[in-house]
Length: 89
Image (cartoon, rainbow, N blue to C red):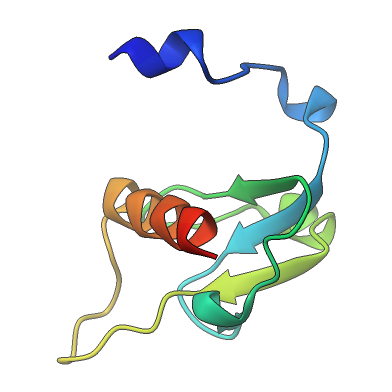
């Protein structure tokens, strides 16, 4: 809850950093993404994903590999995994 006081909040177009869009498939595995320097992670709606124009503005796209026949992850879960990976890296 207190992270709101430690995390900068800016408008979408004001965010500084290399943009990485999370996509359900076709992106580089998340573990291979270079998280050196500022990175902005973009997550889309659970069903539709990121709009094409937003994805086109990303430096690269990343995918979280999942097994067991699951089609996708809940967007909150995907965001948590992506933030964990960014912190781990």
